[in-house]
Image (cartoon, rainbow, N blue to C red; front, side, top):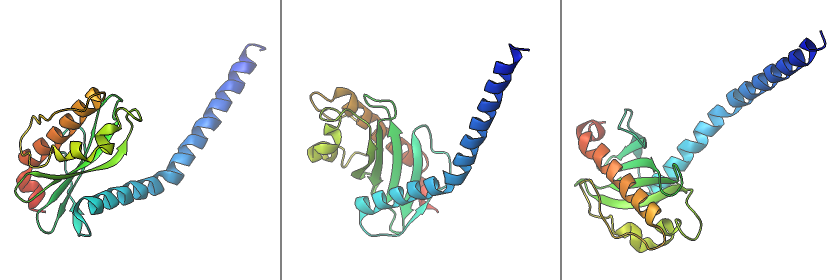
Length: 173
């Protein structure tokens, strides 16, 4: 009996803790979804300026989190990719009506401050991707931020692949 009681107490504690976690998740999941949508919308606005955009439903491939299209045919594709950190690069790639990269906006960046964060902090680096329309994307990387630079190339390439492989579905929304 003495050996069963501690196991029973631990089981009850685990069940109560699990129930509280489920309750907390259910209580906050709508707010978290709203915050993600707000962050996405503000990133689209930073990318294209004040414009109306519609989210496009569908599976566009690995790493593609969201796709939005504006009324004038520009597309914003949110991509999460590995840099130095797993899933450390979360960007929005703007693609113009001609299918070329026209802008890049960071949703979040989990790369090493001062090193990997150079991909965000050096505007010239983002501009190296502008005008690209096919994958793989090759640009000169940033010294000291090799993994992050390669992660950016991969992310932009994923966005272009998603756009080129699903162009009709994206633009006919």
